[in-house]
Image 1 (tube, rainbow, N blue to C red):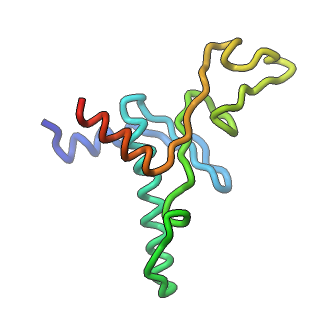
Image 2: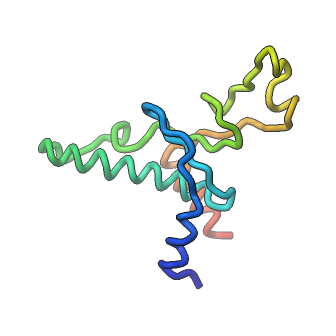
Length: 120
């Protein structure tokens, strides 16, 4: 059985790794990747809703309320599909290091993924 305290302790295992301008990068265990991505979406919703309400705006379209997508990846790269081919890495990440492309999921895909995982 999972208690709120146990869940809070599990959450503290996550770490902010990089925060630059409009990007925030977290490292989380694979088993919690969808929870963390959904938490980022929900935190954006709450932040936007707070400021919109302060301005007298009481309705947010999905395109404002949620990020267009949250990247889930094993590598810090600009895009989840980027192979990061460079002079020192001419074959890219997948060939040189066996790192497959990541995925970018919108809020609806994240909810669907969480639902599938909860049924298992």
